[in-house]
Length: 329
Image (cartoon, rainbow, N blue to C red; front, side, top):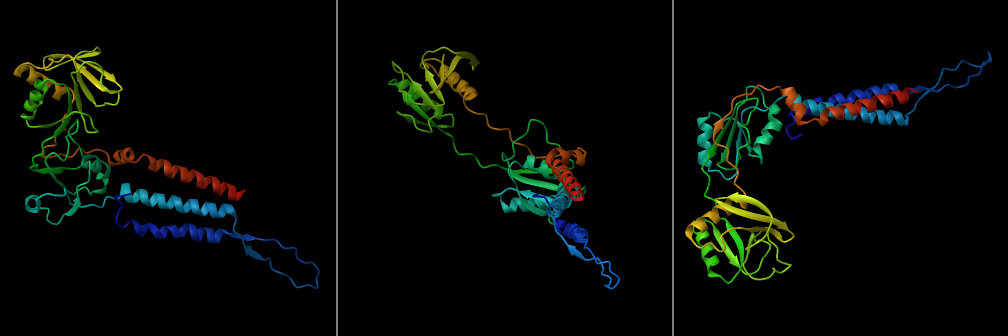
């Protein structure tokens, strides 16, 4: 309902039709016994207006059916949007004006860029007229690239501003060890561009616990990942290392890495394996592009976007027919 046709209210006078119809139909003739003696004047049949519960329910259902039909037509049938520019918040105003001027869309309507803009465009594409143009201005990295190139019924232009450099990511690590080589290892990891905050006890932000002590760790210690010297579990190979992992109530235990890494090559292999297995990859950003119309069927697309509309109309129609039959009986 967010893309209602602006003139949808012009169809509201249609709701007066059921009201007028029921006003005409609600007259019921009440038969009265009339005298038949010749000396009495003739009396015309008397009528009175009677509202029955079926009349009230039928009127409500017919009004609901008309409202649903008007809304469906306003949302899915009559396109009304013209040239539109979707602008992400926080962009340089001068850059935005240059892009709009180069596209010759100074008179286009401007809309704030919604989240998940590709899905939003697929859901609301029917609201644009056939000759309308759409320009999307976003920051590089704000729009992730889908698995397949985006396809729309019309051409859409995506222009991206340079993204601001992201702040360095901070990893919270607990070192339960007395070996200074682990401290040196994570200091070397920090030189690769990310920050590692070392602690002696886990918190809610802890991502990794390195347990290099005899005995079992405290039962209250929990983290998504653990590095331990030995263990059994599933095998996985990454960066030339044959690692073993097993899921436990305290987190996922990793073993099989050099314990501790004794050379720069071992440290590099461990860092590469850790990045490949435990760090979620960043989504690939959508590049600047201009899509070509796919010429898909708008009716079929609308049916897949809102499959509950036909069921709602069908349900109201069946209910209206049942109440109409109940009123006649």
